[in-house]
Image (cartoon, rainbow, N blue to C red):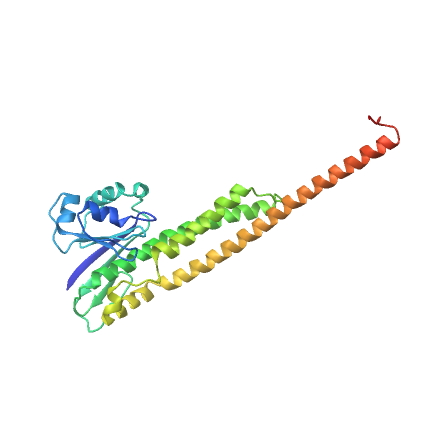
Length: 281
């Protein structure tokens, strides 16, 4: 049975593909939904070793990288070091997080069989590597975003604890920073990973479209996306509540200051009328 292996890593929030394409001498303008596919001479120059045409690296604009057909850890580390020259954020990459392995097996089946570790197809078609890479690249990117969402929830929980202890004042800077994290989280999910967008080949090939939809459903990408969207809406609702309470408290504080100043002015006037304080003309 012929087998192709895939290793996917989420290494950044965004990767500028056109910078890499220019460096590699690839005369193409890449859009967000298109992966940069490196093979042959381009990979040879980057990894400084001969590369068979079956070995490829797909780089996605939303920060994921997929290695196709048996790359060693040393080669993966060397390639990510190359990426770091374009995206310094890659330097914070942790190989034990946000990664997935998958396999494409050809033969010994009459229908497509999907599992957590591999997919078996009756015969090889050229669109399989790109579509499988796209799905697992989005899956590991979502895994990273899901963890970032958890960090935001932890931060909000700390703010809620403060409210429960009676500390009702939250600074504008803290509110702004937390809101910015939520907006960035939603932007990364919606704009970068582009769960709802499909590769171009799926619009021209019904087989490719059907295979891609099955992969999406099996990896539950649409369901995970909807869950994150609903959780993000909850985050916005909680932040709106924090903001309303905080502004109300500030408004109440200002009102009390005004009342105190009025009381002081009335007391001073009474003291002047009773002669306790001389009146100067």
